[in-house]
Image 1: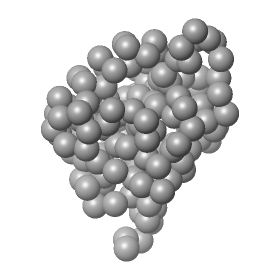
Image 2 (image 1 turned 30 degrees about the vertical axis):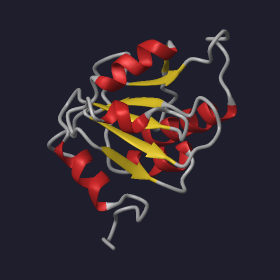
Image 3 (image 1 turned 60 degrees about the vertical axis):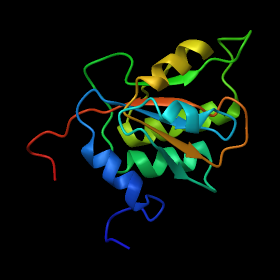
Image 4 (image 1 turned 90 degrees about the vertical axis):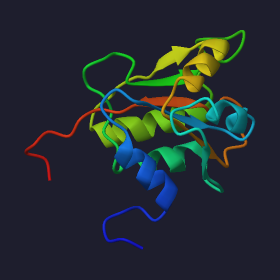
Length: 151
């Protein structure tokens, strides 16, 4: 245990988040996403896990230490529902609420077509698989910067 660090963040995840740089992409995936095979193509080359957490719980823990990019419109994204790209299922609304809470403002995610999401995931820095069992619990988070005056 570490003081001030969310205990849901395991050592492998913390190491990865710390190693990432500005603009690097993190994929947060549900249990149905082909996480292991996709993760092999990423920078880390291995799958990270945050088992027994919903997407929103994992996002909340990650966003407690991970700044989102403020320089680009695609700072965060959600996998589009096939055949209904404008639908926002509850799992995605929950993660959006965690993003808004962490950012202190409404910052809507972009939507990413399913196969474009898979392609983006293969180019990502890392994939973290959660215990989320609901469909479309897959997200992209682009790392931002922490200004020098931040504590």
